[in-house]
Length: 453
Image (cartoon, rainbow, N blue to C red):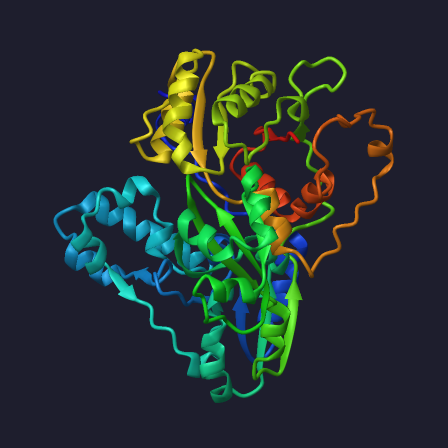
């Protein structure tokens, strides 16, 4: 007779671990539960990347153009569509029953990827109900929208009496939300139309973000602006390509809505202790690789020098036998950087595979040097400086540990118009969010934030 430990081992070997979807603090959960349980018509506004956790914890109707949470599994439709596949039918029935017992909706999006892959596109459509969002009848169930869809409330707000707004994660919204103005621009257009503007000179040295005024935008042919614009900036991305971005003063948007009241609930728990989170930088006294001396930073045009420097830092962190994940800001660098890492002896999973499959390959390979390279655009420090202008005071008061820090900047280097630790401090809500998300997946994960300046 097989014992329990045998099945645990088999499970660890052959089944993918799933996150617990508990990436929400007790304080946030309790505050949101209290507000949702109160009488009245309510709309929740939250960044879309929080929806997966919210949908596991609360019974909400989610409104979005892409209908990420717009499809709900229906047992009758499952029976009619998958009558011949008894195993898959039983698995889906069990999933639906489990969701209902927990008081949540059986969203198709919540199905494990291994199950979703067993369904073709037609079957996926046939086994689901389409969830309609009715803003005229929200007293039955609150609706959740993302901040960029706030205009929908202007259309329906007057139809709903005593509408209350619950804003969740506003501190994350301020760090992640932006809107593009106009189309992408090339260097010739920028140079021709802004050649007499001193601001353009700031980008000649490799700087990727500069602030703009509406007058500059009009010179670039951009004449339409949303209401309540907070900041406008120009981004240089890639060789000779530019984008103009803006963000909104979200509080002014909320205050202009036809609502009874607005409640703000923070997502990030400031009291959460990050025991496995570290900021990494070279030893200024003992290292020959100092960013200020090498003139490298995330905006450097000379990418080879930058990544040689980065790998000097990267190779010295963490347990050498544990798999590492390197997160990039620029997806276009993934292929060349993977080739460079392979030449240095790292095992890199095939980037054509899904991210889940890459993680599996990373864990099962026998190499002591295993690395997964992926990308997202959340830690562009200089962009956040542009986004937060006028909202958060950048002035920085060092704490006792930082006062004892013996790091001294290279006074021969170019003087900067910002303080690095101030920028990192402004990122803290986002850093805390991603740390909690990693912790939710595996408490033993270690989060290194590699910096240079």
